[in-house]
Every structure is written in C-alpha cells, then in structure tokens.
Length: 287
Image (cartoon, rainbow, N blue to C red; front, side, top):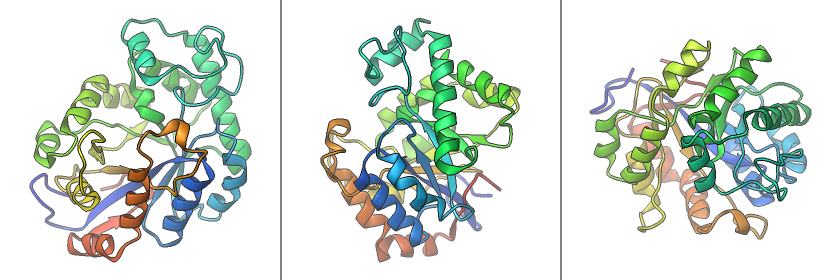
C-alpha cells in the first residue's frame, strides 16, 4: 500500500493509455509503449473505424496489459441509430452530454443499446469481453448514465471486470497542483460512483491521476512526476500518448501534448522515475 504523502513501499499502479483506435497514430504510439512495458492497460474506442486495423496488434499483448472498453458517447458516430441522443448521426459534444445528464434528459434506452453495441464490437475485435470499462471524457460516471452502464454490465454477467473511478482524495488533488480545477470538476461529477459500482457488484480503483491542463503550458515530465505522487491505495494513472495524424485532428485541439506524452513515457527519464519511486506497473488495481 502507498501513503498519500509519499511512497514507503513498492507501489502497484495501473498506467492506462486511453483512446486506442481513435486514429492510426494513437494506436501505433500505444503499441510502442506496450512493447516496452511502459504502460499496463489500454482502453479501446470500439466505435472508431481505425480500431479494426489496430486490434490485432493489441491482442498480441493480451495478458501483459489490461484491455478495456473506452465507452464513447461524445466523439464520432454511434454504432447504430440514436435519434434522441444523436439525431444527426454523430455524438453530441461533452458539454451537452453533461448538461443533459445533470438535468435527467438522457434517453436511457438508446444509451443502453449503444453500450451493448460497443461491448459487442469489443468482443468482435478482441475475441472476449473487456478487462475493465472506463469512459471517453469520463462519461461513464455521469449521473443517470452510470446507472445505465451498470445495469447493462450486470445483465451481461460481466462482474469480473473493474470500472475506472476518476475521483481521488481532495488533499492529493490539491497537492499535485496540476490541472486541479479539471480534477475537482470530475470529483463532483463522479461523486458516489465507487459506492454505486460496489453496490452493483463491481470493483473499482482507489486513487486516480493524470489530468493535464491544456490552457497553461506544463512540462510533461512535471505532469507525470505529479501524477505518480500522492497515490491512492489502488491507483490508476491515465495517459494519452500518440503519433499525431490527420485522423486525430478533429478530436483533439492540442495533439502536440500527445506526442510529448509518448516521448516522455518511452524515455529513460520515465524509467528512472519508476525505479526511483519503486513503482510496478500492473494491469488491474491491486494492493
């Protein structure tokens, strides 16, 4: 177990690369890090066309890295018709989804059907169900939406998987001093998610970091040095490495940050950070 004020013994951390399948460059960068053992989990976006070509490469790491579903309701197109949620055939922006969730205006049946479709697409791509589920822009923890997700997972008997909780201890968030505002917003939106998931029979992580501010330039090494500090007892650190490409441009206003993350996570400096802090990268939350 780790302490919030520092690491007193070996820390087991899930380092999860998000957005696999979003573009060829994203997937290629993630696979490079998986090959070097610099990430321990990958979450895949099954509604994205680029996933089909990239999935076989990720399957080669099955057992070495956790492979999860990056539930997506805010980027690209749904896998089937959603006339109430996505009437123009593309997902609404994140801000609209959050507003509708907070005002109980989500079409629950449509969303449940899309969750089913994305789970089916995951099984088709990887030949099995996911090791975990998280959400693009953390939509899976939104009020109203989280209940839909938990009900679908429970109905399908997927209790062996774990769910990513993007909340953390307030002292840890403020102590890291990087993107604290963003982390606090998710703290509010995700309030109660861990208890809700536990009552439904699902495991979650305890401790979450990796938020990054795109409004203020921040050295990427400082971002990860902070992310791997003040860790919770069963922590997850998220990352978004990539080789930026044209396919990514519509979804990311600051693709440069992904290239910076890729370079840092593959560097000697990151390897030294893991060694100095006694960190072991693991595929699922564990003590």
